[in-house]
Image (cartoon, rainbow over all chains, first blue to last red; front, side, top):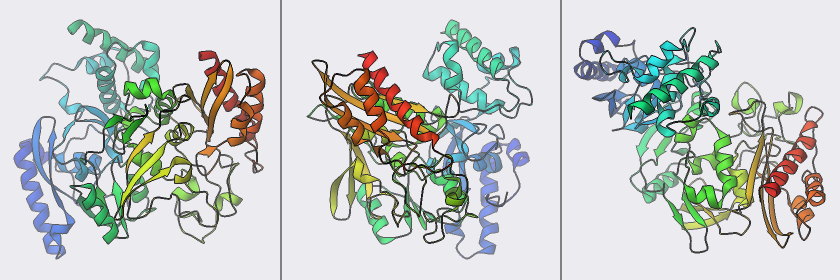
Length: 201
Length: 326
């Protein structure tokens, strides 16, 4: 996309080898590469600390980079999806300090020191989060593109309103669109996860 | 996106100083509107002044029974003092945007959000509000969602806020600070009608920031209601909305404030509708008269005449539900 900041390709493979070290190395590489191009490399990037799925990361980001692009391109978590990139679809939903937000509608630099949870951070080892399990059990997706956003939004919803009645789920989930229209199954999955979590409490 | 200098302000004074020194600077808080405006090249600030973290998110009681809501209070608030004392405001906020957006969007930013006119949002079209003097593509284009009140030959966009419509009915004041200190702007004077200068959208000066919104303790505020009509059942901008606050004593209307959304370039105070209620029993006759009066002065365009009857119906429903809920 011409309007995006994509200074370099995804570092998913580097990051997979060791998240914190990988990103620190990646950031260093970028800084020196940028320095070769412009005299004011220090102004072109800002250092930033983010806690992503429990890992504290040091990043150097372009201030124009959205939180979504930073997560996907710098950190290498691709659960948050770029659907509309204008705050309408909800595919980029993440938890920011525990609250659901749209990562496409904010700049990463605004969130120094804050905690981000993506769908990658939900499961406990091989044990899925009850919302993830319920989405599988209820077939709550078709193509799956919106699913990570749906799941993050649902996880936050069940924190905001534990035991929410089934008829109120659609409105509370209205910030997440599903072009396959799996809405009924999504609603059923969330209601079921709500029951499971209530029993676990 | 154009490069900008990012600065995290450590105090209100520092933020104001930065705004005064850098005419191209803009304040950023929730970022829910500015992010897309910058991405689309509609706003090109030289500096972004991040005010998150300044202690402006408190809600506190005022001596007259009112509330002061900090500019950084998020639109997701469900503070029970607002829910009980100013129900129209919470109803407006909840109808305004998805939970994800409300978790970030602030009270100050809500008042400063830009219009959703598609011609404003797409730089390839002429827009006097975005590029003064370039013309108004909506006048020759699709104006089916545009304003019927308060328009001018230079702009017919509608103001998109739900919150600000409720704030009109609640008689709010906006507290701002600039280099010369604090001042208060009544909500009705905060947003400007387009006239010949649609690019000047608010009375806030370039070197001022919003500190808080204050809701006075009015008898009518606890008896207030917001009704919004939109194209689908959830999360869309209003085609027409109404915030009503009515004080009834002995069956008679003692005071009333009625404001419309989705029909004018600013949250629209419907004074003729208020007068139609005053001193009359709060029943169907007075409500019907108020609804008819609500669109006094309307000048619809050929493709948005429906908004006249829609706005009247929304006012009628808001007042009827308010009466029935008593």
